[in-house]
Image (cartoon, rainbow, N blue to C red):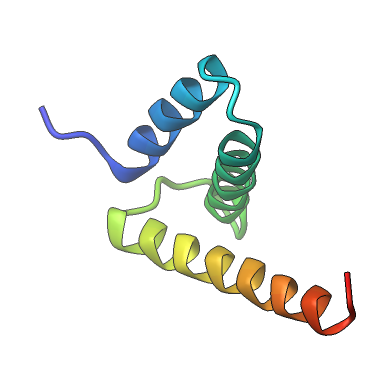
Length: 76
C-alpha cells in the first residue's frame, strides 16, 4: 500500500502535535491548508498528485524563506 505525500504530511502533523513541537506543527498546518485550498480551487474539487503536492510544498517553503529574509532585513 503506497502512501501519498499528503497523507504522510498529515501523519507528520499528528506526530508533531503529540510531541508538542509548535514550530513543526504550525508549519505543517499551513502547508496542508495550502494543499487543501488548491484541491478545492476551480470548478470542482479534486485530489492532487504527489508531483502537484511537491510543487505546493516548494512554493510554501519559498514564501517562508522570503518572509524570513524580509524580517531579517527589517531588523526583526
